[in-house]
Length: 140
Image 1 (cartoon, rainbow, N blue to C red):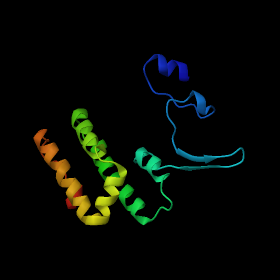
Image 2: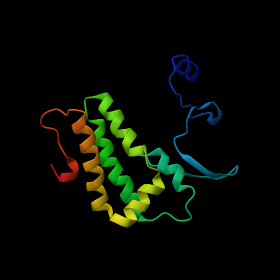
Image 3: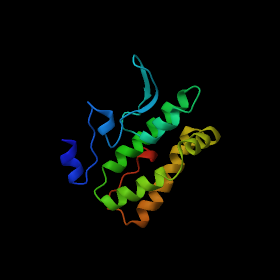
Image 4: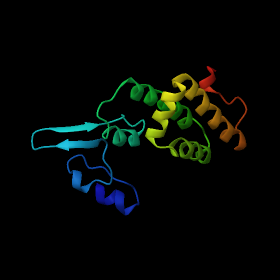
């Protein structure tokens, strides 16, 4: 129950009542009694869903950027150290979605992926990563 979760300091989602939720799964754009339009990134990057609402059109660069972020999200989620995971997430989310899209347009998705991977690698090295640490953006 929502009340039990809140009593424990846990955010709660009640699908039957939007007003009693601490968060929404989709960024809602427009609503009438008969139709709701919304955007979801399926949990990959909720901030991008909210940013997408302000766009007149969405093109393939959004899907490319989300796919790239999802690959980093999966890699980060697989790391054992919660402090390192938090540091990497913080770094990825330090820029706005618009900044990432602008950089994608300037650099291209391949160069941007390598650039982000190298930045995360730098953070992780300073964190003393374990032996055998993989670098997915380099294909290993």
